[in-house]
Length: 155
Image (tube, rainbow, N blue to C red; front, side, top):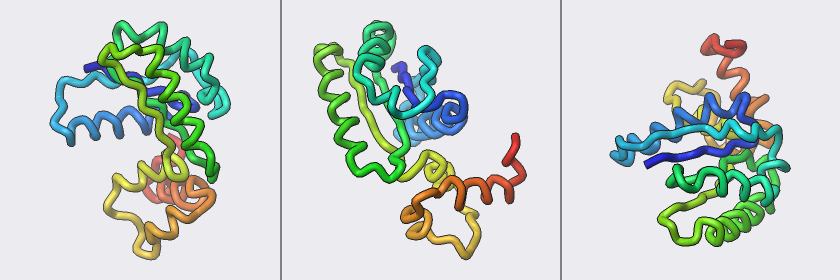
């Protein structure tokens, strides 16, 4: 199976999303999965990803070689973000036309960097998941300090 991940900003997000999605399929015992990150177009923000014309173009160009399209964006405290993503899923059903292809669109709570933190079991003792998930800006409040602790902040 071939999976194409469509991030909101490929420059940074690809380095988080590819290993997370690969680990997900490994956990599901799906070893015959190839995960690729959409490089064309190279979106620079969620507003570009949420435009149906952009997603439709990706589907049309890749539906013959991709089995699963995953749109992954940050939630960024936007209450209606999930509705916009569900609309993309519905429109994609018509383009993919029951060809055993699928588009799934999801928003990370609050940001993908929280997913990275979830993969670590050694977070600082004074951090709680309740606080991390409630934080409006978890990248700045938790991810950057954690990356600094691990010595990878500017890698």
